[in-house]
Length: 85
Image (cartoon, rainbow, N blue to C red; front, side, top):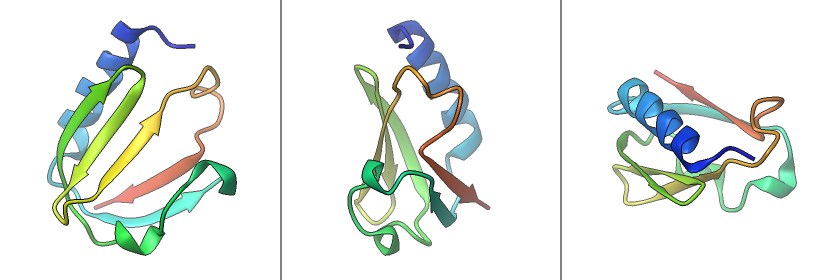
């Protein structure tokens, strides 16, 4: 399990990399770990990142969010991939 300082470090890194990027694709590695419709986030732009505990939140320009919970195995295989342009 990552500790909160590690989660914040990941958020800061992601923030510098993905703000202003558009989601062009999502590949879900584990269908049970993704709730919602992929179509709702396709073509959206990430406008903000935040964190609540071990959950990273990506705010999109269409007023939707992607919440990513960092579990103990996050470094082995992500449960979905975002393709950003």
